[in-house]
Amino acid sequence: MEPFRLHIYACDQKKPEGVPSCSANGSALTIEALRREVAKQGLAGEVQVTTCGSLGLCGRGPNMVVYPEGVWYSGVRPEDVEEIVREHALEGRSVARLLSGDERAVRQEIDANKKKMLASLRARDEAGVLPDDVQGSVNGFRESRVLLTAVELDVFTAVGAGADAAKVAAELGADPRATEALLNALVALDVLEKRAGTFRNGATAARYLAAGAEHDSRAALLHTVHLWPRWSTLTECVRAGTSVTRGSADGRPDDWTEAFIAAMHKNAAVRAPLVVRAVGVEGVRRVLDLGGGSGAYAIAFARAGEDVTAEILDLDTVVPIAQRHIDAAGLTGRVTTRVGDLHDDAYGTGYDLVFISAICHMLDPLENRAMLAKAFAALAPAGRVVIQDFILNADKTGPRTGALFALNMLVGTRAGSSYSQDEYATWLGQAGFVDERRLSLPGPTDLLVARRP
Image 1 (cartoon, rainbow, N blue to C red):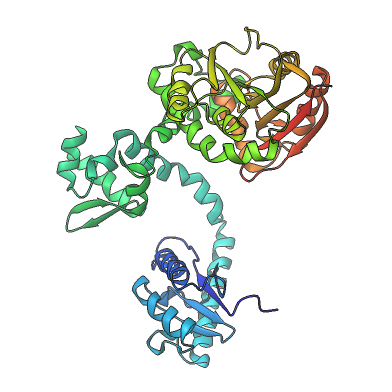
Image 2: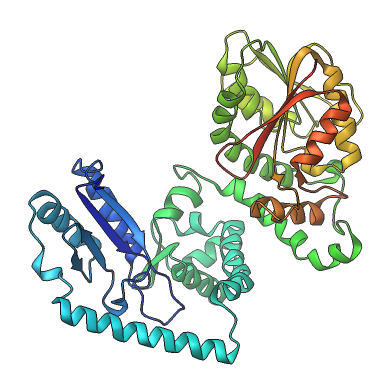
């Protein structure tokens, strides 16, 4: 079976720092350039590019192999990619200057490197060294904190098109020595670039992290900045069985709410069309978006049908944010807002669909039962409730994101958690719903849909 004329395997193996590897030699940039050039030449249907593990020539990377010919290339830089695609993929000629060498020499080098690798593994095993993936998880907070501090200080806006450490420090009102250390660490993480003492935003920072960027994500990332203090109390929360830092929603500062809703909106704006297509709006005229946040889902439902109207019920600190998004979408009047508390206030009646996204995990089981009972009462006969949330397997050990998110609720709420499908099915049945079914979507959350008879 040969579904592609050419298949290029490009090594992107990551190894411990200081150990030769294609990744350390810049394979990511080479692979990105290769994929762009293949697409540019209109060869995406003929040439498949696949990343792979070590090819055994680690000191000479980035390495790649082109099949079916079995041609090996080494030391391939982004600037070499155009020649490879032109000569090899289009003209059928190998690029001699980049060939890895004759078969015998290549095999000897691979065998020698494999022996070194196996010897290293034996030595590490005998010494009881932690596996690299475990060690990486243990130390992962360091890289996270570097990025979060840079976001919190707005380093990427200060760097702009280029600045030295002293200028960035002055812009931030920060210590010059410490600022330079932070900037150097960001270069090590491939977020910034540095030439002759001048720092510049790399491609990712320029696109996502600086003010006014094409996809400026700083407001959303500040929500993660705000999570940091709570996660640092996880040990105490496990002992206590609840958050030890939580406060009421009314007591949260405005910047917390803005960051939280911005983070939710960034995810929802992409996901909302997928959700609406999966759920459908046939027979739907009135939608209640319970705790609707930025309004992204209510807006998507209204856009899906000319006769669909949606109402968002949320707190007085959130409703003005939702109204901004509604006005920007040009749906004022078809998407409305109502200040209310899902625990204490009535939901209304006669809705065809009640949408509950990212709410259940903030509540305990009793609160979820009460909320679903009120949702049942708010629906017209044959109306549907749609829950979007992390849905764990029966023993609650996965999916991984949902299991970790249960701890996010532990450190941040009184008794919130991630729940299993069996738990949701029980609560829906107790509320009177029937025909419960799960709709799987790409990403960490799924949908549960049930109907009022």
